[in-house]
Image 1 (cartoon, rainbow, N blue to C red):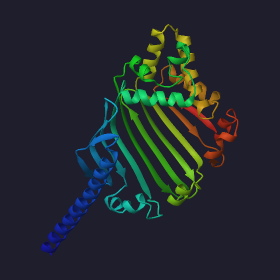
Image 2 (image 1 turned 45 degrees about the vertical axis):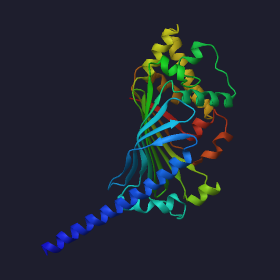
Image 3 (image 1 turned 90 degrees about the horizontal axis):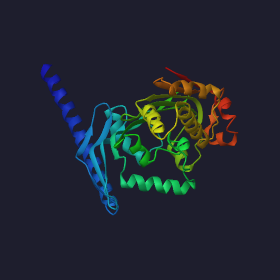
Image 4 (image 1 turned 135 degrees about the vertical axis):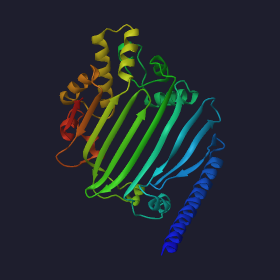
Length: 318
């Protein structure tokens, strides 16, 4: 009996090792194909592929040198999370759209993507976005020092950042009512944000490909924690000659502008807690719990001032 148990353990170990080797080989082949396709535009290097019994599959130590730019982009690891090793083995059919069955759980991982604040490709990308938007940044410190028109490469330098180190985990999980979408993002010495969105109704890859999937939000929660950005913005505005009241106004105006760009005119149930957050609280929590699921594609049909009531949007701080 003891020998049979030992043989069983050895067989399981060999099967696991063989499956892992096969999986890593397939991913390495895919990466090599991707590197070849990208070669006219960028040189990509990586140190290897890693997987865990918990269902993570990642490519390690990625370095991307864009052919027309000087500065590299480096990433400690990037990949997927399936919730379990056996689910990981079955994920290839879903990723290639051979299967219409949505995994019960599926996620993406990005750890420590490093972008220099003055990277030439970052400056170029920002300039292209600005040109596409058609807006011009006014020469007014009260409108720009708090990031009302975005965190430009120059502003990041003014705030004391030499690089941005960004990490993210994103997952989709099937639940009884529909889908549960989780975001967990972090920028070193800047901010953390954890968000959960509950979407009502069924979903399939076919719907996504055909454009017939119309997500309806039934619940939303965002927990945003400041890690130094608010202080840096206050100091930046003060260096540009603004007093404390003007700095607070500039920060609130930047927040309002973010809402306007997303079709929302924040009311006092969000703005008042936001002011408390700016005055010294570490964390801002924003929630939305509409009376019935709201189609996200139809929110822009409402007046921006009506959206907070539609979504039952509220905020709190701690």
